[in-house]
Amino acid sequence: MIWAVNSAWSNVAKVDATPEGERPDSEGRNVLLVGSDSREGLTDEQRREFGTGSDTGGARTDSILVLHTGGGKSTLLSIPRDSYVEIPGNGMNKINAAFSIGGPKLLSQTIEHNTGLKMDGYMEIGFGGFAQVVDAVGGVNICVKNDMDDPKAHIDLKKGCQDMDGKTALGYVRARYSDPEGDLGRAKRQRQFLGALMGKVVTPSTMLQPWKIHSLGKDSEGALTVGEDDSMIGTARAFWAFRSIAKGDGNSVTVPVSSNNLPTPVGSAVQWDETQAPKLFEDLKADRPITVQPDDS
Image (cartoon, rainbow, N blue to C red; front, side, top):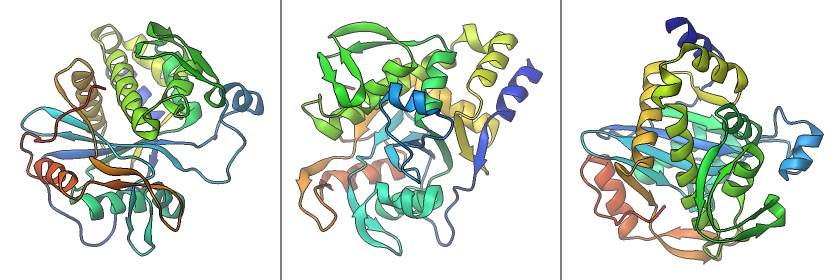
């Protein structure tokens, strides 16, 4: 068992994601999870098949989530990628610009600066890596709430529960033009799918069979990146927390917003609610039950 776990962990890439300088104090543990639009590892044929487009010359964040664990129920928080916030040293901009400008370190620093939550861990998965992981576990069953016909995401899904392979899953979590809630609706689907995926990865049928752990690590090699300071045990605990949330034993929320169409010098952006967002951040910072109503994702 130990050799299989160590073998799988050896396939995980490491990156410096720890902000420098003064950092906030917060109770519990917060792990930043980034879904980047990196095309690294995808062939030209796969880029056409997945509908990811050509290499952009630098990864951007397609999804930003924070997993909070502590003394009570775990909370998975989605941060809309178009949130208009202050990026330390770079003025006001959409939050996903922080990743483009300064990578994981600046994104972590930006989230800490605007939420007061200390980021204790980091996990990143790209387009190609996401599809790899889904296929490595044999697909994931997801219940689609509404018909979704989105040519840009290369999907045409009908309402109802269905098994999704890597290609379909990638389109499902990326689509927003077919969702009446736009970016916020996509954030809900990303949390829904992530929980279901992690739930399948850490099932007893996988974790208790060394050959399955070894196979999963090999098949999804290079799919996952974690912070240089992250431990194997800490990452495993995050996986279990995702699974708990997927089973209903936890909270799934989006940063409360007051506007989805805020005019700014960098285009239309998302504005956080000046009352509800700070209240949510304070609850998480103190590791107490959240007072913001969880959504239906």
